[in-house]
Image (tube, rainbow, N blue to C red; front, side, top):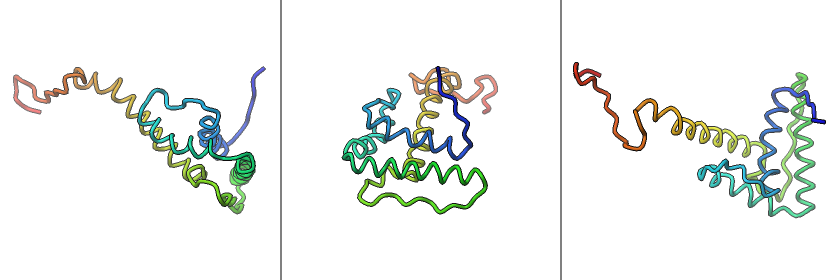
Length: 140
């Protein structure tokens, strides 16, 4: 039987973001075979795997507080934002992970563009040659 969740925009975004260090800590390859993703995720992987049990417990408590904060925002409340635990690498801070998640989405979209759109638009990405002129009219 599967899991059923009802969550709003803030909680949904947090769930996507916080899975990055969790998956990397578990040794999952979330790079989708894209070298640029592997490079940007590597510092998060290093930080997540370097946490000892006490630090990881602190980090999980921070994440639980962030979920509560997000749910309160969805209810229209104005809660105080949870503090990031001292001594942990700031690369796993939610704000840092948000930026990383955004950057990873841009990389993925760029890869899709290279794979699907550019070959159609220019007739073949392998040659690197683009002819934008109509040979008969010599206009763009």
